[in-house]
Length: 139
Image (tube, rainbow, N blue to C red; front, side):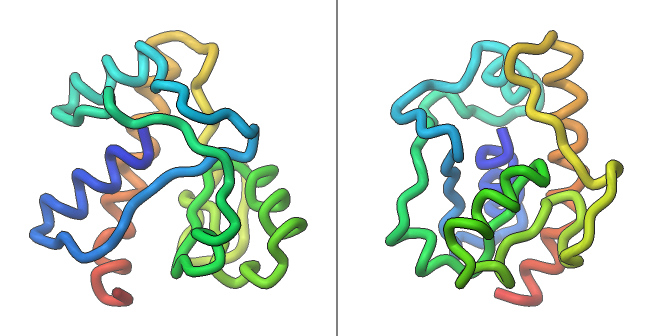
């Protein structure tokens, strides 16, 4: 959902000059989004039906400018295996700060109810809307 929201919001701002992509730390490739993720995004005018999961691709990470994650374990995983990227890894809910607290965590709704997906969508969209101006200024 985050990839779809970020790409839609960035393009809606009139910009088409960054690459928005997603990679997972669980090593699952080519999986479609869950039906509930597709449904909740569609309710908000965003089509994520063609997005597929991807494992971490080291070459892509090494040339990225910014890595946003939803949960602290994702941040710590990436910092452990890619310490050279530590300054580029942020919790989406805390960006642009490197700190985090419980309020900065966006729980992955996979396995949850439609309500969980809607709550995650709202959190993701709210933080993405908050940081779009910061990203526009930085990139």
